Image (cartoon, rainbow, N blue to C red):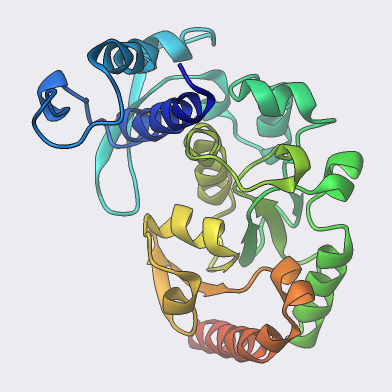
Length: 277
């Protein structure tokens, strides 16, 4: 198979894995056009190779100690099943971290990371800040948002009267992608249950999602960040604001003004909620 076709094949496998695992949607052979019926990039033998490469979810998860199956719902109210794993019964963030700190689910990330970057801050925080993935500094220190982007995030929080100690900060991915590339769909699928568990344990009043991947993962949306920012959303009954990632602001200083507008709105709504109660 040519190099170009091999790349397309791998991308297709990742795409199908994402939908097979996350949306409980099974791909059947009759959904793939037959030769001569529409345009196909692959021969029938290559299509069979794709089908064989899509893992059975249960088989993939069986490398972990399992005790049954649990049903969960995503933010759209869709039910799907996860194989029961030990971390699901954790009662504290510390015990949760200890259960997943050697996570092997994403082979590439597990092989290239220095450590899992779990999260930091107040375990009873009213506000949780969710980013995309650790960078080189975070991978080195084991703490999210500690590089240049982290300093900018600290300054943004300080400007709206929040300290890092009173909020909780974490990412969609707990491991650094090689070269700081974007998270892959299957990596998000593997790691997002950890984030959902963190939010379930912390029970924040509000969430600030910084960056496209954080926003799209929490909201199960494919909208652009530009369409999602500037207004409130709801994640499992929790008010959520979307804004630009601090790293994006370092590259595009012109985005600082709309970010400032977003976080001011966020703080005003937080104050309103606190005063009501």
